[in-house]
Length: 393
Image (cartoon, rainbow, N blue to C red; front, side, top):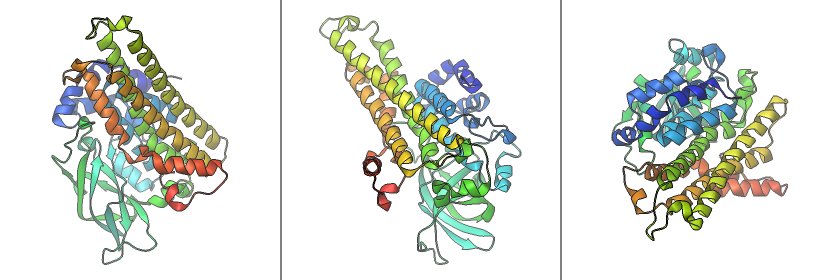
């Protein structure tokens, strides 16, 4: 079933497509773009209904992120990353839910989750310090999830190590301007974040390890299937969907560019069987990536909806599918870009931006294939992977 938010996005398709150059130039989404996306509602797809959200099926979330990314990769990436945060906040302490959404249910939250900060226990909460990279869409967010390691009173990481997810308001952290000078996904504004001696009360802190293994969801008592899906599926979903959407945008830009083009040897592209073969193969691979991602999302939802536990093997297979879908889509983009001629390199052609954005999307940690493929192969043999292989699964 087509969701109303996707229809809202398609109504502003021209505006999203047209603002892409400006987003890249200023290194973040323009304020007007964020305003239009807030009105369209993609960030609220996974948000609880009681706070004005849609509690949509995650398939609809992925489809919407793909649609935005096909128009502008940076906007799609921001929708995929920022859009998953309401899903996690839904099983956080009700007090912080009220703080974030009580006055404005269209409040956006940033991240990153990488535990590059420390949290020292103090009375009533934690004292936190640190610096984080890659906070996508952060200029338009008023709250943030930050990963941190639990430390002792001297600031040394405690043993055994415990990861925390801290939730901070905008007043408690600094966005580092000019910290996002990159070759791809420039318009995401994925800047650095600094926290200096901020107090984070207990109710704004989640045990990151328990979020990942599903304990936090169970302890919160949330009943909806959506909020009991594995974190290792939901967190990567928006990111992988964005990469596939970017690939779809690249294919569309390529077809628009090639339609009337004549190659260097004087043959019209529409009459060149070699180029057409590559285009057909690339289109099939991009579509296959899309269908694999959506089918895996449906399967995960159906398992949980039936009251069953998603096994580690099923999670590993799902992660393998996500990773491979992203790589398959980007490899297809390479095939069409290499057959687009020298003029496709020009900065006024959207194809080169989609190509750069697609490759930048593969650099996210969730798309590193080594341990994911290794773990899924081990589980397919009926064996239990060692702990290092269980990361991100």
